[in-house]
Amino acid sequence: MEMTVPVIPKSALLALRIIAILFGIAAILWPFFMTEILILLFGIFVLISSIGSLAAVFSKELQTGVPRWLVILMGIIGIIVGILAITDPFVMGAAIFLFIGAWAFVSGIFDIVFAFTGGIDGSGKMLLILSGIIGILFGMLVLMTPALFGLPILVQVAGIFAIIYGIIGFGYTSEWSCKPAEKIAE
Image (cartoon, rainbow, N blue to C red):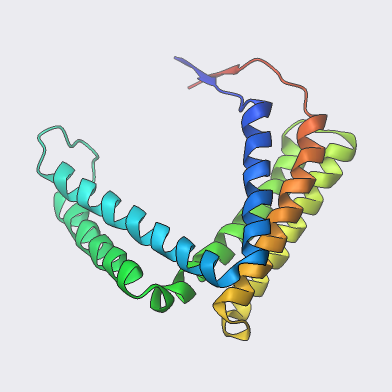
């Protein structure tokens, strides 16, 4: 059986870069506000997602291959985490930023791997490698020294990262040549 691997449109990638830059600017200008907003959005997302998981566990259509008790446990934990994030955002802040650090680190590794395996040449490849290095360094900074910064300062550092990430992304996205979706054998 053949599968089609979709190619992400350049317009979607450019939109993500613009959003990253706008987030970065807001994080630098209003770090306290953005810290609280990010944590509240996370809490709302986790709460809604967990309630949805618990509702799905009692549905006859749930066919995940995951034991129902595990889905229930994760739903309950998610509801607790969501409520904690909404009621006391700064208690959850450190854990959320550690997650952001891990995400930046892993994304940086993937950017570097993609630079060598994604068929990108020239300056686009170099910019993707640079983006990956910046992601790895930012991730390491957050993961290794989370107590070094207060949350608002860390949000500003994340904002600077987002602006650099967005600007560099414009460079290597413009280098890509859009290919039709590739078919792969399963």
